[in-house]
Length: 258
Image (cartoon, rainbow, N blue to C red; front, side, top):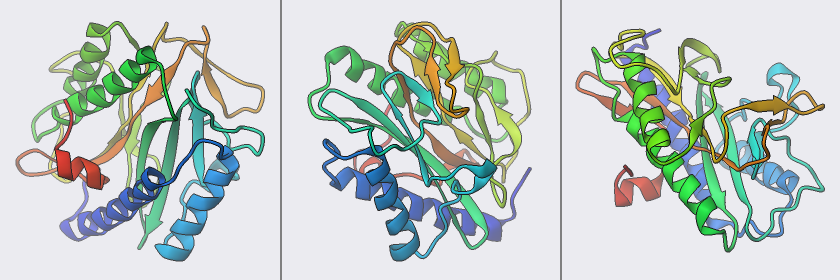
């Protein structure tokens, strides 16, 4: 479950490239685009501009570069030519990228146009919860510390954490050990060691935590129809803490939230 320094350097490069994909989305007016148009734009950028591979395409027979999860979609939303992003929506784009044999994984929830205050608060709290988890990462800490920090922040703000999906180890394969739950008890779970690389990707619901999968076999939605938001970074355990391999430019400028 640990990576050697030369492997970590390659993973950091994959993470840097993936962060630039979100830079592209940040610069793009998303309102009025279909989620399929966003998928095509991201694929072109990854393949032609970054000379990398969109790692999700073909994984588990999935036919697209990204997941586009709008409003009450929790995760694994499938891009569609009829799914038009409109004023007031929130949408999570979950994207993976492979370069030099190593994969990075990250996601961000975007506010489309004028979004109501309750939705903005959910998105803000979800971002903060991810960072609470990231800041719990260090050698000697336990995975339960990470999950506890995330769930504590969500609950404090009146939200629930989806339990059916979790973060994961990552490297040459998309999904490696360990599993990273977004809930837990402090002082429990796997002890973190320098060189471990995994994702932290909480899905936070406005209503109850329960979800269901739609008939397409991919799209996961909240059972009660309430909004859901998600953020994700790929992180590495360092000798004295944590390195966020997919850190985005705007985060570097303003500093990490939470």
